[in-house]
Picture 1 (cartoon, rainbow, N blue to C red):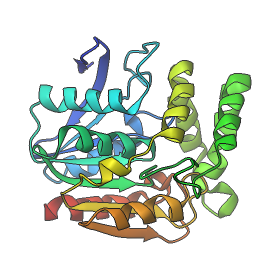
Picture 2: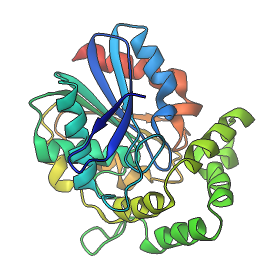
Picture 3: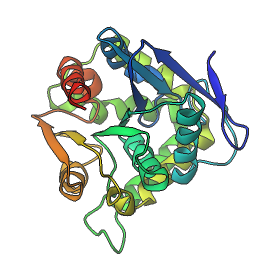
Length: 273
């Protein structure tokens, strides 16, 4: 397997398909790089170098006990970018992955970055706080952690319904649902739990202020996990060069339910950079 060693020694797995201008994908919770296979293949077949990694604690990467915070996630991305010597890279982050690519820019700048795509992302803030009262109440995240501790497999199986909008007219094959569960269960339980706290409590507004590259924000209008009005809509307003696309009635997991539309939009975006 292809891996790089992060600063603390953690082995980070990645897949690297195609050749050309690089596009680096950061996955959502509780998934891994395999969620991006359609996008990776689509872009690689069209002359781009498509790269996706498993976040520490997930998929085929190591499962350290600590390090499940956005500063560390951004450091891991920096280690991957510098090890592979990626330049003019487009960063694509879905859900919690939108946070780590944003924190990467906030910490390391855009010298190596050509563009940013935030897909159903938790930016600028996901959870409710004193400075962001419109966020999702922290009791929701406490419930997620409780559900994971009680019966992780069943909790994640049930989570697919709002994630993919199965209760709102969307259709996902049994195979797709099985793959989602299989991917999620590869992850460290500790990492799965700690990441809930990370995306519930991290404020990315300082990172948003440092985004100075063309940015594409895509969000589903019927996202039951990461509400559009308090995340994607606000992120697009905070980033001066942002283009906002709202997928009508799309759920959180639109990388699967709206696969063809997303592939085409990403291709158009990376071609424009």
